[in-house]
Length: 199
Image 1 (cartoon, rainbow, N blue to C red):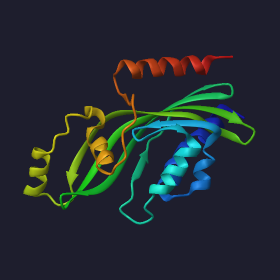
Image 2 (spheres, helix red, strand yellow):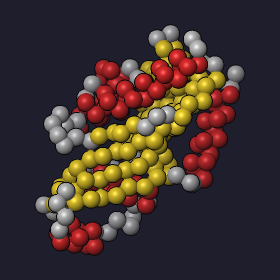
Image 3 (cartoon, helix red, strand yellow):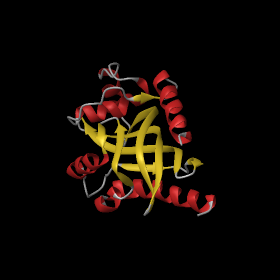
Image 4 (spheres, one colour):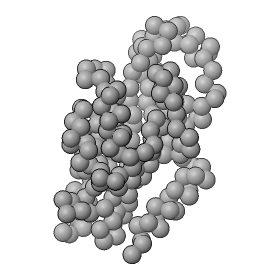
């Protein structure tokens, strides 16, 4: 297969992950990763099989649903391995104190992919968090008061509001969440590049 076809297949795979995750297409979602695949995001770290199970358990089939806006991946190819970085926006809505609030989280996915007999699959995904925000669905004094009176300081800034949303929903944050520009992010990238060039 030529590199152009590989890049097209990988791009579609990463887009399919977001669509299947948001729409609750669990069998198709499972097929985006290898059988031993792993994923590390704010609320989950472990096998992708368990991630799908956990996602299915909390999925809301009706709006407003969480939405992943997936960008075009930057792809590095090396034989039957690939490394991709993909910008993503995570959009959601929740209620706090009677106020409907939208949140937007900017991050990127660092993926290690392998070519299997059935085509390309993601073997490992780690999210790297950059920034996020809250916006009121209906602006007003109640939202301004909520922002002033709520202490967000215990959550690192790159995922502060997404983190608050998860904690308020009873979903604890994982240890070692990767933030953009950190030493951990640099080390992760170096390790991924070494993996790509391994024989």
